[in-house]
Length: 491
Image (cartoon, rainbow, N blue to C red; front, side):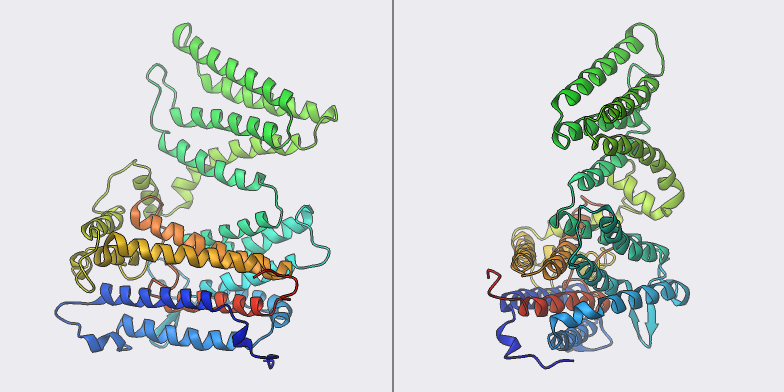
């Protein structure tokens, strides 16, 4: 630990601290509301360490102490220790797979006395720190394929470990770090690939069991092949900026698709999927020919994208039925409207929406939520804590909490942009991206617009590991921000 020069507390961004404190207090009050029982709970028991409210208050205190300690280390200390911290947390994550007790099918919790710790929550910090350190190298370039591959490897390693712990939802959080790569200059092609993959999966799965009225052909796979053609032509147009090539592909694909459909419906019935795959093969061959003619080397990436998109779609069915657990598969089917299971996988979301709706405009009042008091909503103080806020504080209270959280994330982005080097900027955006992913997915889960993947709402949901993990991320960044060269940055 090093002695800070000057008064470090005068350099700290206190607006961010204030927003953090506000979220923490609102979260603790929401946990009080979710845990309170009309019969069993007295007001003094809110600080009882045997109750969840007391434990959360304890973790809030521990996090503040940890934050104060982190503020005492200078920026270059985090730079120098990033490799050690990253490797140590990865090793602990791997060991957790073998020593953790099975908790609801998960192998991610280590029991220490009467408490449980989830190492995966601290891997977010080490991964963000390692990514920022690597990107801070003087010779680093995001356009260098080797550097980009190493960045992706830094992100994928903890994801693989957490998936091995059977915590698929927590692993998906690391996908948010790709936004950091995009901010540092990564081509938008990767983001397009991610978005298109989601579209192919949803469309293919949702309509795989529905046929055209005129033909015994499933709509799902047919629609996916058409979408692959559209995405690839758009890439030729807007990424390669080759108007003639994109127009040629558009005319050929559209004409052949419409002609084959009309022929199959009105002249002779045949499997039009064969035509679609031949069209994709034509697109690939045409793009390769353009490369051979020296027209545009980027076409090779689009050709590979088409091949990868087809492979990804055909693996979707295998993933759905062989990789995902039954409860995860059912959650996706319920979300896509393939099943209505209000007593099973859709129960949490259904009861959560009832609780939020019953809150009305101004809510039922603190400790007066009937849906939460009667335990209709499972996990109501962890993953579904937002429904407690909606029921007790109503639309206005829920909107206020969301507004504070959005301001908090925007403030982190402002701090990230004013850093004087790539290390501070990359770490700041890592933090903002992780918080944004948790916020968007958790609120979406509660409202029934995203799958239930079991991730907490930062500083709001009950959980010592998550609260401490998020606090470590935040206070480390505040110290990095305090050490920036103010003559080179704009506040």
